[in-house]
Length: 584
Image 1 (tube, one colour):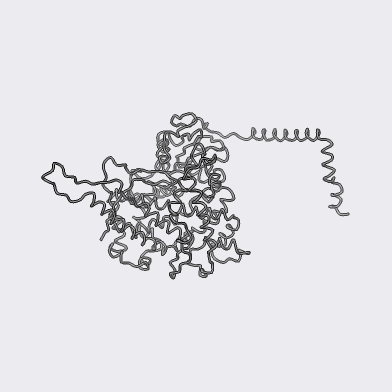
Image 2: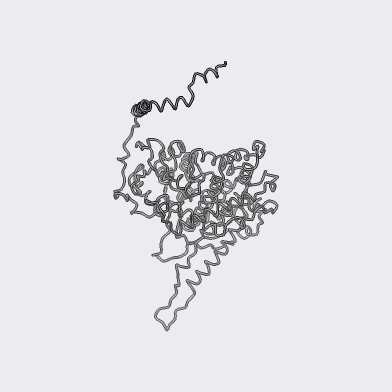
């Protein structure tokens, strides 16, 4: 008899154990109670014996007076969240607090706090305001909202798609969309000029009347460029993500007009609006049966986008990409391989193996959610930054002239550039376009420094922790005010002014500090994977399109709403109205 059989004979059968327990129920109950009590005492003693965190109490944080139950919720609108939180930070210091309803929110705005909170995600901090749960329940989980293993798998899948080496191969794609952007701005320019002539016609004084009307300004006719910039950024990210229209050999793989729903841009804006409302509302009305038109539109949009992405995945033909060295179909390829290849280790394409391994651990829902995240985040942030840049150029004509001079000196006159073919344009743009156009790069850096699309980040403490001398209990919600932190320690003069020269004339030490303070795309392990793509789109748009125009502000009455920074899901400037006059 071997040892295993001896052990089996020694152990009582399951039936005997159950019978004995039934015959001695009272003894079993007492024993279980004693064990539970001993365990509870052990955990209590372990917690008591653990070293206490040293620091000031969270209750001693400074901040403005708040109302019971409502907190500060009645003192600001959601569009004013940036202004409200930053005003508290500037007044009360690097560590302050506010209340959204009964929920305390710590406002951290020192560079040291920002570095700690970004560096220790996702192990010690996670997204705040129940972002993960809300996005999951709403059917749009993705890299932005995920935590834990779901986030790790999504990160391993998405990051290779946005590697600098892969992004550098998008030159022809971006040039194609830049050409479309230029055509759209030409049309916009003519429309605004016609409106301007209508408002201020050449009118001679009528000697037979006491007053002659010369001003026909109508605010209802004001035009905005944000939709044009959104279309540009959206076209780039769609082609990049799904390869609907490659620019290699004229091959059209998938027609996006057939795969994506009409008015998709407007539909995605609904997703942003509804998710922001759900994250910050005190009463979750949508969960208790009160759903308005936006909620219903949200559900309809998510369902349509899910079906569209599913169709794209099903229609994808990997045989269309035999030569993969210069193609940008890695997202779809990794999806296809993970779903159809039994042995993904046989994949030889660089970067595709790791992405496919990660994708094989994800559900279809997670994949679809990540693709929707790429679409949503990829166009909104870039379009908002372009809108901000043209406003700052219009408000600073000296900066605009320097940008014009730099591009003219390298690529030729505006009239000559308009005649260049895509191939000629591509040949004229060097691989390191940022080094080729240093002043234009400085304009982009300064735009993002003053008006980052994400001037704050929300995190929640997973464990008790100490931040800047304050003990923050587990579950504390923290708003990381990155812009305030960067401006507190700006190493160059006039931190509140738009001065691109600071990125060129600064000392090496100053430049290093400004780069450390650049949290435009977050930081730490959860830094935005699409940052290289976004910056490449911005500089191509500035060099190839925006430099072709003299940009001026549209004249408006003194009482008109000024340009202001608003906050939807990302930050953007509102009330921006400019004129584009083609240069010759």
